[in-house]
Amino acid sequence: MTSYDLKRVIGEELARVESRFDKFGKPERKTVFDKVVPGFGVRKHVSGRRVYILQMRIGGRQRTVTIANAAVISEAVAKDVARRLILRIELGMNPADDKKRARNMPSYEQFLEYYWETSSPNWKPSTQKTQSFYRGKHLNKSFEGKFLDEIEPADAIRWHAQLSRAAGPGAANRASEILRAMFNKAEQWGYLPQSSNPFNAIKRNRGRKIERFLAPEEAARLGKALIEARKDKPMIATIIMLLALTGCRRGEIVNLKWSEVHGRRLKLSDSKTGPRMVWLGKDAQALIAGITRQKGDAQVFPMEHKRPGNAVGCFWTKFRVEIDLEDLRLHDLRHNYASLAARQSETLPMIGKLLGHLAINSTQRYAHLDDVTLLRTVDRIGDVIASEMQAPESMEPAKLQNE
Image: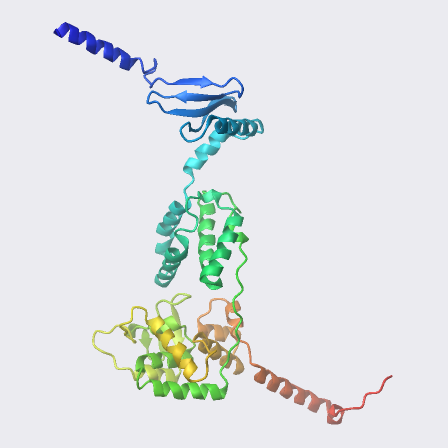
């Protein structure tokens, strides 16, 4: 082949390639429109890919909406979709704008990650730890494959019910609160319309309302058993004694640092309600003062266990059975502390201060008095009233006759 022939062949091939582009330099594509459904057609690209489209005038402009790849659905199905789109357009809706909005809508997984990156730096360390646990356990795969605006109230209610059965009512409540807060942010940040949070439809599971107090005999039995337990488990037994004497939450004592101990006070850097002050009675102060501090130990109760709170809980589960207080939870020691304060006529604000509550409503549930105290109180009031009425004989049983 001569050089002239080679140039001719190359020219012919280039001409064929160029013919695949239109006058604007864009790849040539051919569209065959249907004769029955107006605007519906099949568009064939140079690559051989075929897609179903719908062309209609929307808002004074000619718009093209791509329905689907022809390799994915049949022409009959595509025509059915096109008819529905035509109906929606005639009713004033704009599928092209809906599609554009959908492209900007994050998926549930994407927004969960974005929300975590944006919000978690502002959480307390303990909150970060707890929230991250619930995320890994219950949230990451909850609504896989759904866009944020596709999650309906019915989806949220169904998810909450399933989680309640699988993980328990408390865990389901906590997880739903995290997602409620997340979707509130989605509204604030403009991803969702206002008042569209699907998790507002969830009805919280009712918590167990337990009013458990220690009778004087039970308190004496517990104290004696803890003194005995300090021989084998000095650290855990001391923690439980401090819980009873201070009304603190388990984590506040288990994670107590020496830097937070200041004589008759504990200056907690992190608690459920943030930094707070705990005032110590003489017995509680003596317990802490009797602990030998090892060089280099930042923790008052250093434990090798990865989760020292769980170690205390496991000990308590067996211990309470041994001392015949099987229904007594560790948290009931806090409840008992508050109730004893109420029996001493302390005000709710004072009890709330002692417990580290931010709202008075939180304190009210701890300030119940047991039946024995109530009966003694009404007897005492009744005696005073009877004395003031100066008619004790009127309190004697009387024979009632029909009038």
